Image 1 (tube, protein in one colour):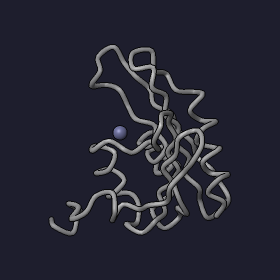
Image 2: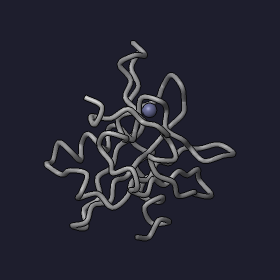
Image 3: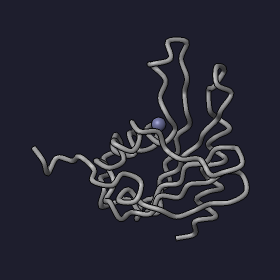
Length: 131
Ligand SMILES: [Zn+2]
């Protein structure tokens, strides 16, 4: 898996962010085993609670097209700033459900990336196994 390429695809998706309130654009890209890439960008709303993050848009689009966790190679999330973009708490909970806990999660800004996974991002995660 070419993580630099996946980061670049997430950065490209960031250009589609609709972010008039925060001016903080985020892009995400899911890489699938069949060679497909599915992107997402953050979409804000005047009613702030209706805003949706880039990584959730990307993973929801992935599932909406019929893919499931075993089809996913990696996901990249790209923002701007001095450090890499990192998912909010709500996104961590969603990704913990929809990704394998060891699937690579690439966090990036415009210059660098790190490779992590949901086990590191959400230790002692609450999942369906508890229900
Ligand atoms: Zn989020």
